[in-house]
Image 1 (cartoon, rainbow, N blue to C red):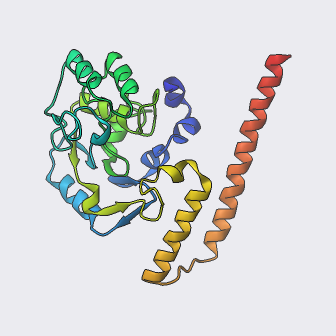
Image 2 (image 1 turned 90 degrees about the horizontal axis):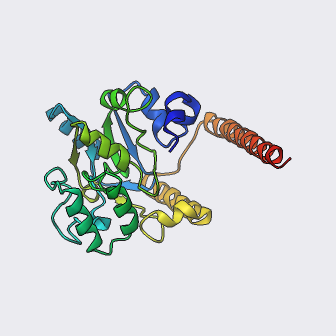
Length: 261
């Protein structure tokens, strides 16, 4: 939420989810995805083909929207959907009335977002980062630190990842192309809830799912064989992360002590 700091503080900005890769990659396109997808189709290939066809305003390809929690979606009022997110454009009054008439999971957040001026695309709508390919040049042109738009991974007041960025990019004339994730991949196949949410908040659930994924790879493709570089790099990275976290905690504690004295 600290827009000015994100604009000027590189380390802070690049700590925002996905931002480091989007800033430093030397590739034309970057695919963001969750690490709990089991693919059965060539989603990357189809994404690249779609980008080749255009239009020139195309900035992202992947699942569009979170229609299951949006009052305009097929499960609720059914006036909008991933293929027609740019066709249903309500006024603020219409969007508020629609949201108030349906008991969606994040109704209060949606109303707050709409009343603060973000009407279209609707608050739940976004290029969904479960698996999304982004045109890096367009992203960098419009997004911090070069452009005025907040980072893709930034989250404001309970809105979901990518919703603010997606809204602002659409406002500037950019377009997304929807691909149905389930046509290419299964989400969270090794996690008991099947959604990945439990693993996000519970360490034990996460590592159980990781172990099941390892078993699947071993049984399907054979044992994983890593070079010595991998454990060495992991160890160094862990030390770096823990040292940085310790420094942050130390500075935070010092500030608290000073403020009380």
